[in-house]
Length: 323
Image (cartoon, rainbow, N blue to C red; front, side, top):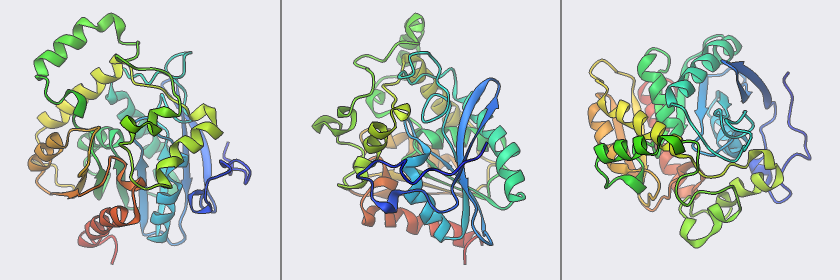
């Protein structure tokens, strides 16, 4: 069943510009027993449809401002909460653990979302992929298997590698995760349930330098506890590293989809070096680095966001989606 968010369903301190756009709809689908929450809004006389994919621990509500930016450009927008986070179902009764059994399952959920919901609702308009971090990894996993789906792809802070383990040899990471197989459902070392300090302590001030946008994630989590998610498990680390390696090993010689990859100059979460390697493998890829940006580029200051949007708009113009 579809419904519109109630006007009183927002965090009390959340500014109006971060509220849902007029006409926002939500729903849920079940795929292979996985209950997935999604949301969308249709533009009048749409130029196309953007499939917006969020990153680790994120949720649809966090991207309402970005959805409005895309509406202004004339696009309908569809987004889904990945299984294991947001308003989608979780892996365990302990709903705080962010687990994974392989990103290929998420790519399969995305395939179902696009085939059974996005395309029928939009009459198969031109599709654009806009993704962030982990969503970029999962989106690319889908795209390389379905290279005709998206006319262009844009990813902010792609999570191809993880910064915390970037200096460890790949063989050692695989061996360590194999040894830890009995503990794959456990939090990573130092991991814990959600609490406000995950994003607000001095050591964890790595997401955004914008004083207002950096608070949106916690505002929603405190207002709607169903959105809270704790640290990843060892199983999630295994899935993430395996998926990154699959993307790096893939032969892109016949993958001609125009891509924009944007990395953050002040990155502390993902390994930008792996994104550099990936961009060199993709024959139709533009790589930009945005100085002074922290990880969440679309939650950054206006100047940083505008740098990304300039690159996004150029990608659309060069491929005759925007004029």
